Image 1 (cartoon, one colour):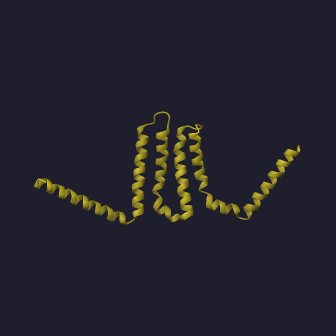
Image 2 (cartoon, one colour; image 1 turned 180 degrees about the horizontal axis):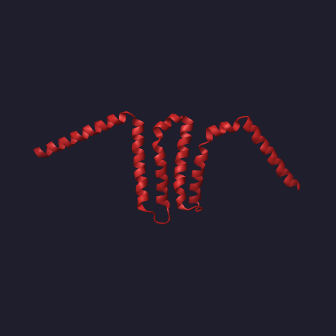
Image 3 (tube, helix red, strand yellow; image 1 turned 90 degrees about the horizontal axis):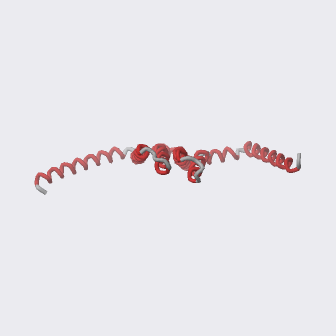
Length: 165
């Protein structure tokens, strides 16, 4: 065995010992507890980089968009509190929508328009659900007020057409 190989083996053994020691001291559990969403976020970013560097086909943009949005959402909830997921759960639908939309826009070969339509429909669904989720019980008051105002508007326009306005 050469001196270079012995040096590499020795360095590997020292690193393994340090990793075991730090793991027993709880360093990795702290890092894992705080930064585990990066295990979801980074593959999403890497998949997008692979596509944009022309190393992967456009279909990888679907999981890339999903993983990137989910990783960002989980990082936000892990940092500020998981109670946020009670309000931000529609972002999970938005992740699928963004992945599909990226694929629809960036695919070299023609993609069915249904993919684009589905991504836009999912985006609207996610935004509407997010608004209702953030408004909570006030959403029902908002819907009731909106129905009352639109009914009054219809009645007012009907009476205006009879009087010749």
